[in-house]
Picture (cartoon, helix red, strand yellow):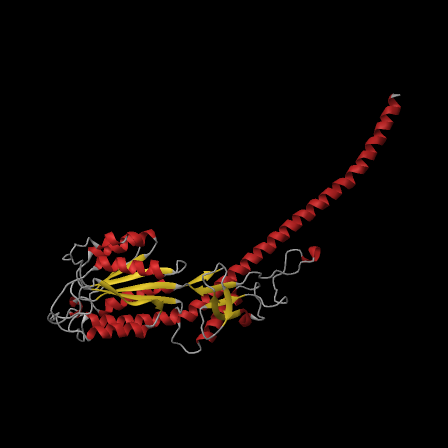
Length: 385
C-alpha cells in the first residue's frame, strides 16, 4: 500500500507541475505585456510633453523676437526663422518638414473668454500659433511600435503665445515746478509762464512720446489713460486745472501716442501750469479709472510721475499719498513711481512699496529715459494655453 500510495502521489505531482508551468508562462507573458505597454504609454506621454514644451518655447521665442525687433526690415521673416531654429534644435520632436508652416502669425479674438480663438492675420499681429497641420506631420516614434501598432507621437495641443492685454494709467504732474530745467542746469524759471524748451515738461513730453511709440510697436493690445494733477488753487493766472485737483485727460482706450502728445502741447497754450501737487487725489483718480473702466483679466498698473511732494494746503487737507493706495492694493494694482528731481521722495517710495511697484529716481533726461525703458518690461508677452 505504501508503494502504491507513493507512486500515485508521484503521478499526481507530475501532472500538477505540468499544469502549473504553462500557467506561469502565461502569467509571465501577460505581465511582460503589461509592463511593455506601461513603458510605451509613458514613453508616448514623455515625448508628447517634450513636444509641447518645445512648441511653447518656439512660440514664445518667435513672438518675443517679433516684438523686440519692431524697427527691423523683414520682421516677420526673421521671427519665423528664429522660431524655426528653436524647433530644429528640438529634433527628433520636429523634423525639417513644414517647420515654417507650423508658425502662424495672427491675433486672438474674444480675449476675455476662457478659450480665445486664434485667427491668422498679419495685419494685426498679437499672437503666434504653433501646431501640426496634418495627420502626416507626426515624427516621434513610440517605444514599441511593432507590438502595439503605435508608430508615432503627435503634438495634439496647439502652442499659442499672445501679448498680454495691458492697461496703464499715466498719472502726470502738471504743476508749475515742471517748468524748471530738466537737467538742473541754469537758473530757476518763473513758474507763472508757459513751459519753455529744456523744461521738465518738454523733456517728459518727448520721453513719453518715444516710450509710447515703442510700446505700441511691441504690444498692440495696450489700452491707456492719461490723468493729470496739479490744481486745487484759485489764482489770478489761468492754469489748465485751476480748482480741479486732478483730471482725466484721456479716458481708458486704445493707445494713441499722438493723442498723448497733443495733451502735453495743449498745456503749453496756458499762461502757466497748475498750482499745487495733489498726489493723493491723483492716485485715487487713477485707481478708479482702472477699476471702473478696466478689464480685470488684463495686466493693470499705474505710472505716477511728479517732481514734488504732496500739497497739504487743500481744504480739507489731504493725507500722505500712501494712504490712497488701499484700493490699489486690494485689487493687486501696482503703482510704479518716478521722482523727477534730484532729491529723494520718500512719499513715492512708500507708494511703490505698498503696491509692489518700482520706484525710480530721475534727476535728468538720461535717467528719465532709463526709467521708462525699464518699464517696458511691463508690456511683455505671455504664454496662452
